[in-house]
Length: 283
Ligand code: A3P
Image (cartoon, rainbow, N blue to C red; front, top):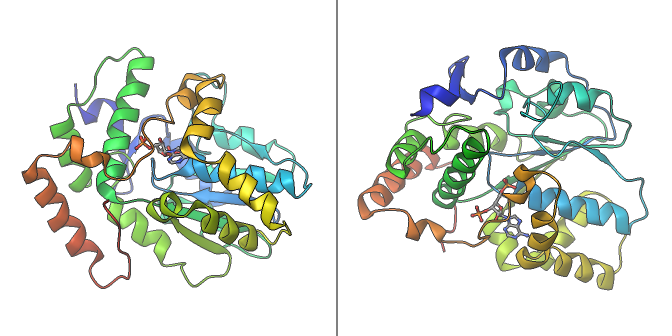
C-alpha cells in the first residue's frame, strides 16, 4: 500500500482522503467569527499542545470556555456523522478552531483576519515533524483497519517531494509566514516552547490579551509539560487523541533518519527556506 490509497490532489496540493472536495470548496464561504481563536499548523508541529495552553489560559482568566472540535475543521473523521466544518459552524461562540490547511485553502477569515480574530501558528523542525507524522499517520491507518500504509523510506521521500498529506512542508510554512507582521498572528516554534515553556506561555498570554499573575502563568506552564499533558491525553475518550502524546522531544529524528535521508532533507529545506528568515533547531 502507498500514498495514493489514502491521499488525493486538490488544486496542486496532496490532501488526505479524510479531507473532501466538498469541504475544501466550502472553505471560501466559511464564516470566522470575531471572537474565534484559531490554531493553524502543519500536522504534528505542536497543535494540540498549543490548544491546551490556550484553554488553560482562558480558564484561568475566568473566560467562557471555548467550543472546540478536537480534529482539524477540514476533516471528516471516521467517527463523525458530518464534516468537521459543519459541526464547527453549529457551535456556540467563543470557538477554538483548529486547521492544518495551507493558507490558500483556509477560510478568508483565517487567512486575512479582521477585528479581534487571533491566529496562532506553531512551527517545528521538518525532521521531527516528519517522524511524528509518520508514526501518527500509520497509527490512524491501523485504527481504520488499513494496516501499515507507509514504510519510513517512502514516507520520508514523499515528505520532501510534495507528495505527502498537506503538501510540501516548506510551502505550507512559508504560506502562513507571509502573515508574520500582521498583528492578528502569533508564530511559535516547538523547539522554543520545549526549551523555555514559561516564556512561551507568557507570550501567548500577552497575545490573547488576558491578565494573569506570575504564579498562575507558572502553574499553566507546569501543567503543560509533556509528562503532565500526556496523562490527560492518554486518558482521553478517542483513539486519535490517545495517539497524540508520543515522545514529545526535540531530535527524535535521529532515531529514524539515515545519513542520506538527513542530507536530502537538509538540501531541500535549506534551499526552500533560504532568505526567508525561518530557521529551525534540530536538537
Ligand atoms: P511526537 O510525535 O514527536 O512525540 P500535533 O498536536 O500537532 O499533532 O503534534 C503532536 C506532537 O506534539 C507529538 O510529537 C506530541 O508528542 C507533541 N506534544 C504534545 N504535547 C506536548 C507537550 N506538552 N510537550 C511537548 N510535546 C508535545
